[in-house]
Image 1 (cartoon, rainbow, N blue to C red):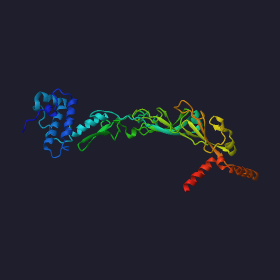
Image 2 (image 1 turned 120 degrees about the vertical axis):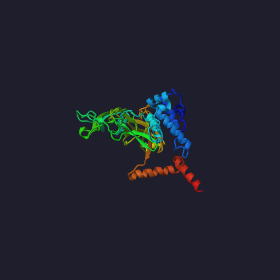
Image 3 (image 1 turned 90 degrees about the vertical axis):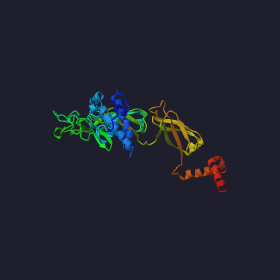
Image 4 (image 1 turned 180 degrees about the vertical axis):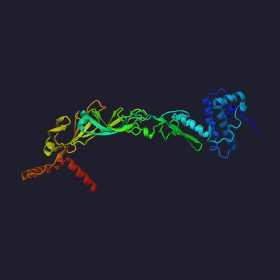
Length: 376
């Protein structure tokens, strides 16, 4: 039988190497020489077995001390012979250690899964006026809150949880999947490491530690909020699990459709009908604003679609320094339900303008010229 190699030499570390250095070296060798990565490679398989055996000895303080003092004669001569790849210290455990380091779990390490409570969303509809000036209102929401009967323990008065028999209180179990060894939350205790007997469960929350309740909250809507803005109420979400922090409540603002105005950031838009006479001769009209009404001059010869700006008559945005403007879109209104006399006056007016149509209706003449050029 060939003489066994020095375990420190096999792992490529010095004799004073730390446990962490030994583990890191073994991981690299296990990943490099594992048979699944090197199919039909007898040499690689042999190197993997040597690394596995060396790690089993040097990762154990007592076995390492015996090896340092007596060499191979100081350890069990059968240790590692013909060992399977899924056993202690195998490739699966190498990955298990890696995953344990990443996720905070490890062999013999007890930890309960503490979760932050869920955030909640509440959709609130407000009017444009409320958005502009700000408002304060009350809302009623359903939440999962800490059970008042058991104070969140999940057990009846005088009773308590016991150590989980599935994970032995660790909160995690190790599952072997091929050559991977993966830790996951214990399905029995859900990571708490504790279980409550059915007979000892709190009758209000049935062992969960939380109950569904309704609570009323005052919500202050600041002036200038817009569609989709969120207001965060810290700690008003659902209670955490296993003593975890409470989540937050987000109130999402939605604006009701306004009868007159449409909002665009800080600006407001409205449509204003004007008479043919005002459009032709000009004049002054009253325009509605969120703060009442305002006077606006309409110049002579105004056409439908003209836009006039009233500065500062919009909304001051939540994150803006100045109020926006009111954009007035004028629409020339055709008169309806005319008397015979009024119709005669309009016919007379039309006759008087036909003699020089290009002068009085420049847009109509321009359109006719374009249409004529198109057909020709």
